[in-house]
Structure formats: C-alpha cells, structure tokens
Length: 325
Image (cartoon, rainbow, N blue to C red):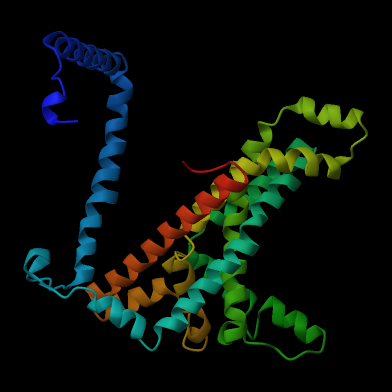
C-alpha cells in the first residue's frame, strides 16, 4: 500500500478524537478534585521517597569515576568499569562475598521460618493474658540496639563468667572462646538475629491468622480434625500468600545483612568468617576513603538484589500464583 492510499482522518473524526480526549481529561480532573484531600495527604510521602530514595541514586555514578570530593561528580574523571574490575580481582573479595552469601543463606533458611512457627504457636495459646504476656516478651528484643544485644551475647558466651561456659564446666568440659573462633561466629550472628527480630516478625503473621474465617476451623472440628491437622490444612495454606510476599521481600535483601548487626560482633580473631560486604564497605569506604570503589560494591549488591527479586517474583508467580506485581 502506497502512502498516498492511506486516507487522512476526516475533520469529523479528528473533532471526535479531540472531544474524547477532552472528556477523559475532564473526568480525570474531576476525579482528582473529588479526592484532593487524599492526594494532598500523599504528597509528603511522595516527596520523602523522591528526595531520600530516588535523588541519592544519581550519586551511584561515582562508581564509574575516580571521585574527588573537591571536584565533585561533574569534575571527577570517568574510569568506566575500573572499580568493578578491581572489586572482582581483590584478593579478599571472594572470601567476603562467600561470607555474605553463606550468612544470607542461613538467614533465609533458618531465620525466616522462625516467625511463622512462632506465630502459629502463639495463636494456639488459649489463655489471653498468658498470650499477651508472651507476645510482649518476644517483641521486646526488637527494640534493643545491636550494641546492647552484642553486650548481652558477649556476657553469655564469655570465657570466665559466661552462662554457656559455666554449664560446660559443670559437665566437665573445657571452656570455649565462642566469639574468638571462626567456627562459631556465623551461628552467633544468625542466633542473635533470630532472638532480636523473630518475635517482632510474628506481628504480620498473627494479623494474617486473625483474618482466617473461623468457620473453617469449626467445620474441621466437626470433621474430626485435630489441632495439628487444622494447622496443616487451614492455617498454613491461608498464610501462604503472606509468606510468599515476605519471602520475596527477604530475597531482595539477600546480600544486605546490615552493617551494625555484624560489626558489633567482629574482632580480629573471627574476621575471617565474619566479615561481610557491609563491614568491608565501611572499612574501605569511610576509613580508607575509597568512595568510588565502595560505591561500586554497593551497586553490585543492589543489582544482585534486583535480579534475585525479579527471579523470585517470576518463579513465585509461576508456581504459587502469588507475586509482588
């Protein structure tokens, strides 16, 4: 077909399209005006995310520069992927990456299911007063700082006055310097994380359990199902959408274990197995002032997290039908 054969839209059709567009814009304007208060309330949140979450993303360009604080982003020299090559060829990088992946994996496999199990157990407590007391007790560690928690764990596992070494001595065993040996540091990091955050993590799962229709449990009781059977057949399937969403969010933070959580437990004796990317970024970035190099490491973490969450979301959508988007 020749271009000349394509007839231009008639004036009537153009007026109709123009009129339809004007109608849609008018409807959108009336909709926005009707809910103007709600949109105004959302403005501070939008500004917060824009200023503090999106604007700093532009600073990631220094990963491709030899950043000089006196020249700034616009005046610093561009070096391409030099800092990424340096990162992968660094003699310590693979060891630190391995530590980070192992701790992230332990956190995902061991720590993530604990709040689910704890929420189910709390839901089975029938005495309301006792249940509220238990909830308060398990929530409390979340409000302690990692500095306080490291002090508690150092007290528990200390060589001389630690409860664990006292118990080992009572059993006739030699005391162990838990925080000074590579083989124990990962267990301590995961265990401290479970103790601090598992109780607080039950809040979402308890809310999801509270939304389950009680008629399902009554029908199951009529059919002769015990408590374990009800948990397996009703509670867990009802929690599945919540579990999948939280699992996907957790996967996105796979390499992001948190600087403070690990740093407070590190010492020269356990550094070999305990150092992770976050603590290395602090050491190389702030102490050694290698801003571009550590920004490249941070960008690498972000890209890996994005890829993991995209893959996890894809497989979750294919297998369970649940996804973030």
